[in-house]
Image (tube, rainbow, N blue to C red; front, side, top):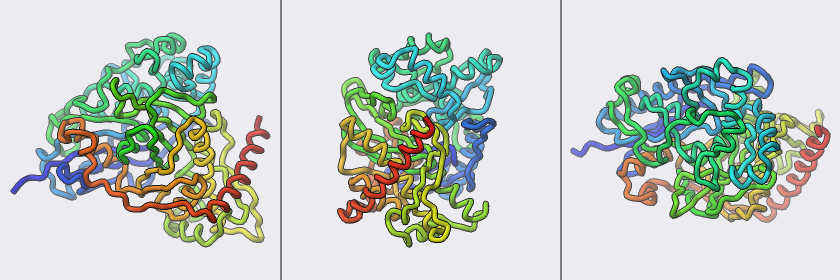
Length: 504
């Protein structure tokens, strides 16, 4: 009897850590686990701050790995390679003994916005948009500068900084390393010179020695240590052969690799991510360009990322509060309630921007808000639908920015997960954006596992890594519904623009 060979994928989010064991030969998942069952806490010591303990990610990764292995009784020798997907833009700092020096400043933290804005002004728009393809904003580089300015004793003890996925890889391998794709997401990368931006480092007074060793996105990045193997229930020596931020990895998992292709996801945050082959930036830096996972000198690939921070977190906030803070109300029930209300939610509109500074809105924080509530007409079903429509309208608002950059597509790929499990959400998305949506049987941890197979050489090419990937559903725009959604969308935009004007 032939013993199955597996690939292990981690997706380290801000809500949970998901682990998938993939049968390498069939490309199909055989087991998966998510830890914790409730969302991981995000600490906010001050308004606009968002922090998590990196050790918490590692603890949940251990629990989920052991659960997955127990489900299939996989032997320690059967795992060929490990891949990692992770929440983007976070900052993790460690000392020489690899001890974490402070909680991670994660992706939705807004404290470094003034730091990035000042750098954009000092370095100049032309340099930032031509060389970095982004304003430094509140990305990782600006967060590191914030630590230098505000926690000098901590900063002096830093041996290396990392992105969240680099930290998990360090716990697995004992090696502190990163990738070009990762450095570009932290806005450390100069796209003109194809190297680390020395000008940004000088401006922020960041020592280049703090940057980890750079390794390829695909390929052997280290091997599982004895200590990590014991903690996970695996064999020492298994190679880690892939790491990428969650959105580039989501695109990979959906086989979104070529110019003009677009992927979407709607988890805690919502993202539309399109592929281009020429470095390009939005003049107002409302969307961001990074090095895509399959970028090479001979075939350059860049990912343009539109992010709405307040997506699934807005829906989960509503669920908790409708349920009185408990778990008595399911998302399925909320979707049924939303479906009972017509398009436009009887003129109830929601701005879902309550999860930190929104890049799409030039790092503004208009907050989450409800508009048009009539206490004699509206109830929970209207709120359920208005929240889902408000999230879609936010994504469509950014979709227009991508279109103006030339990223136009009639098809968007997404995993059948999170908000895309809702028929109301999916229907609103296709009819507001006017695109067909293809929903696939995949997620970030599956994508990381497939990519690990590419990185270790099990798959001869990227194309052969996608056996087992299946389109579960195609949703086409409906002209009549589209008219109703676009009318509601225009009303929503008027509310947003008024809110932004009033806050100016």
